[in-house]
Amino acid sequence: MTAIPKLIVLAAFDENDEGELLPAFEPREMQTEERATYMAKILALKHKSVIAWSRPADPTRGEFGEATVLFQQGELPEME
Image (cartoon, rainbow, N blue to C red; front, side, top):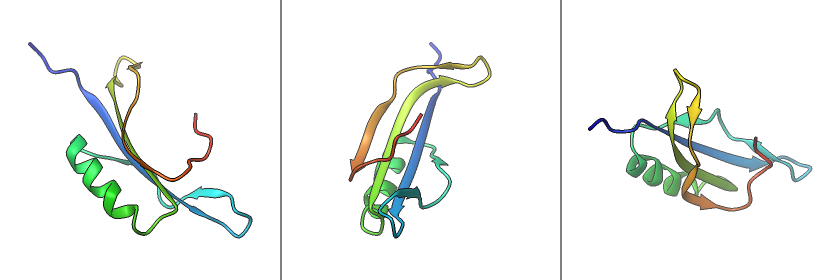
C-alpha cells in the first residue's frame, strides 16, 4: 500500500503600522507534521500569528485534499 503524499506548510505573519497582517516570510514546505508543529511553536514566540497545516496532495495531478491545521496562534489574514 502506497502512502498518500502530503503537502505540509508553515507560515508566519506580522502586523505593519496600519495593523494589517503581512507574511513574515514565504510559506515554507516542511518534511513532517511533527517538524512543522515544532517550528510553528518556536515562531509563535516571535510573530503575531503562525499556522502550520497539512493536506493530502498530488501536485503532479493537481489533486489536493482538505487541509488540517496542525498548529495555529493568532488571527490569520484572508487566504485563498
